[in-house]
Length: 165
Image (cartoon, rainbow, N blue to C red; front, side, top):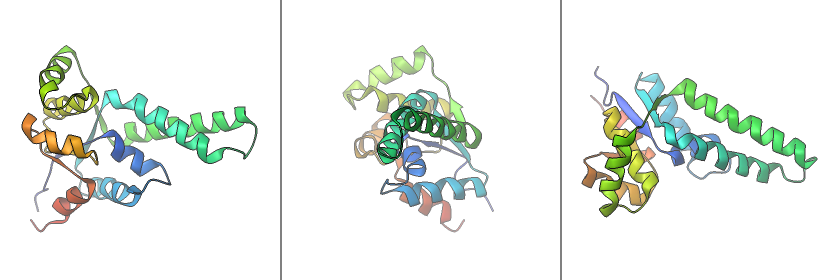
């Protein structure tokens, strides 16, 4: 049986969905990651998203823990958990680096999408030669084909992975 995809790049929102308990798309993101690993698909992430994953997770965890102890203990617990998420990404997936050529490419796609972070995700997908980029970002989903990147939602990626070969 051949794999339906060899390399899948996951966007920030997919990682956050997988990690944070109150996110609506948590189940699909977690299932996608687990099923991809079961199929031995290479999971990727753009290295530039790590600070966003860390910071957004830190803020969300602090919010969830508010009122459950002293502020400094809550901040430390949130920081520790956010680092666990980053380390989980490192253990589960491969970082896709970036250099000035990615920044150049992202700037060339300004006409597609004014969001530099989205354009850097597209550049990372091209650099890594990912078969798919997975995101819940509707704007990124609509602009990716114009950059020559196949982008799908987590649910659609699961359908691709589950399709009979």
